[in-house]
Amino acid sequence: MKTNLKKEFTRWGLLILLGAILIGFTQCVGTKTSSTVKTDDYHGSVEQVPSEILEEARPDIIEEAPEVAVKDYERIFHTMSAVTGVPMTGNPLTEYNNRIRAQMPANSRLETLSETNILGIAKMASEFCDVLFNDNGTSIGYRNAIWPSATFNFGQNSNTFWAPNSNSRTMFIDVLLNQFWGEGVLEPLEYQEGRAAINELIDAMLTAQVVPGATPGSTMNVAAPANNATTTRNVAKAACTVALSSVQVYFQ
Amino acid sequence: MKYIAYLSILFCLAATAGQPERRKAWVIHNRVAGVPPTRAVLMQMEQALNANNTDQAVQMAMNHPNFTNLVLKNWFKPWSNQAQSMSTPLNDFVATAVGMIRDNRPFDEILYGDHIYYAPPENLAANNITNVADFARNNNDHYRDLENRSLNWVAPLQRVNQSQLTTIADTAGAITTRAFGEAYFQAGTNRRMTRFVFMNFLCRDFEQLHDVTRPDFRVRRDVERNPGDDSRTYKNKCVGCHAGQDALGGAWAYFDFNNGQTQHTPGQVRGKMNQNGQFYPEGHVTVDDSWLNLWNQGQNAALGWDPTVPSNGNGARSLGRMLAKTRAFGECMVSRSWELMCNRKFKSDEQEIKRELTDRFMGQQQYNMRQLFASTLNECVTDEN
Image (cartoon, rainbow over all chains, first blue to last red; front, top):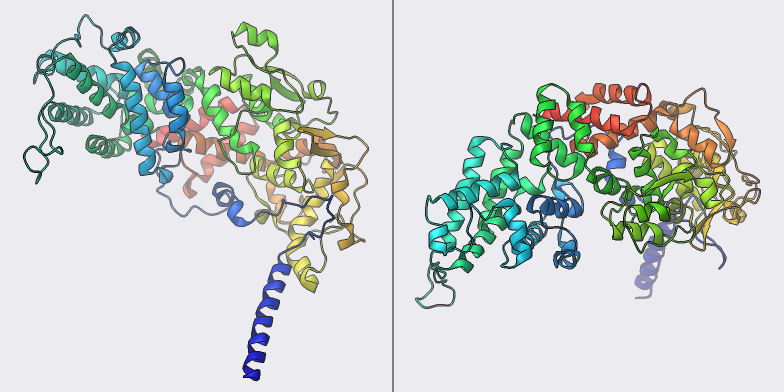
């Protein structure tokens, strides 16, 4: 018993000694300091070194790096303001966006884009679109700059404004996509696919949604919205949010 | 969310697809200004690209205020703190670096020029910006307020002699700004400044400069010569960085960061330069701000030192000048610009492009960053599309 205990002590003693030597070997600059002398924090570990600096002298291993990047928080905020015409200051967005900042992309590296970031971008887009499609004088001013009231009557009931293949519906989508994604920037096929996706969304917004497996009358099912001007603006708001939170807006 | 996901996938594919000149114009403007162009600017840029005039198209994008107010600001912010974070307030270094690019000043002067940019009251008034604290050496309030009070914070900036505004005699551009002082002169032994100057402006950390063949007569006394009771560790490891960097670091002998401000005490070596002398009393004792370049021979001769610039001197400005005139400085600015504008690093088969861009940047462009950005985009956006 006594021998075993002695062995244990010896083994642990050796381990501690080895650890101390290893630690000692890595310290070039002594850190024995008096209470008035500050310690040196120059010796950074490899983990503290930004990857781009270390990689500078390495041969490139991954040749097919992505050539697109994500816009950071500020760029997205500025971009959404630029394409919607809703100013970045002087409205509830300023305070809201300060709160949502932590959810937004912190840098431009594509590999760091997370689901949280995408949700944050969608939230920010919905706030801009909310300002754009509110029913007050300021919002109407912003909206008219993109969808002139002479052509677009958002006071119409939803069944009229969003009637399939109606002028108002077709033109609304075209103006929306050209404004947010750039006129003639996408190839025709890409544009048509984007257009079809928005059309599908509008249809879904205007019809009752039955969740598969849900019992009739369940609160999970959603009834068709009322046929009025509020629905017209709400559907426009949804289409606006989807277009504004797409990668065409937040990629660069 | 279903529709957002659908559109995201669709345009992930679209972003890499081949596109006409209008698409290129859109991409260039988004990268340079951080926001899409207006319809009118998009058309003008497309025309310029159709005429094979990428430079003109890039210049149009650079005319957008967000190029300086947003893109350059966030590009420089990580250079000014140890964490390399963009989430930091505007400071005097960022304002000075952005101001120099706005005014087309040779960017090598960022390491030795007597420059600082701030917003004097008359400029603030002319730009209708209110409630901005006056410039002060011992806090960052002026720059913090400037960023918070105006989206167009670059407009009121004005260059003045840093030595006049701060009373530091040995000014050296970024190195002697308050932001750099706070990040790299505070506490420690001032070695951090050498390391981060190399990291930020020469794109090399000390691991990459490690050279144990350099003589160690300038290694300071706080470096143990037998760490772990084995002098081989010192000879094979410690000396690789300390021989070269301690010889250069003498330039910071009179600098410190205390009471919220970068301090310069000419003729008075700061205590931290000679602290912990008990570890090796025979080591180098710093008695003035002289410095010596021992890395101009050996493997680090590859940094491309300018033979016309003295390899020894006194103080921060002369050291900053020597570093700014290296080939490594030019290459580093080219690499960083490439990553900013092209969203990726150089590929191994693009080394010739890198060499040409560096030659042009240090030669005919005379360290003009705006021209470098234009050349960079000319290479990569044309190649991508």
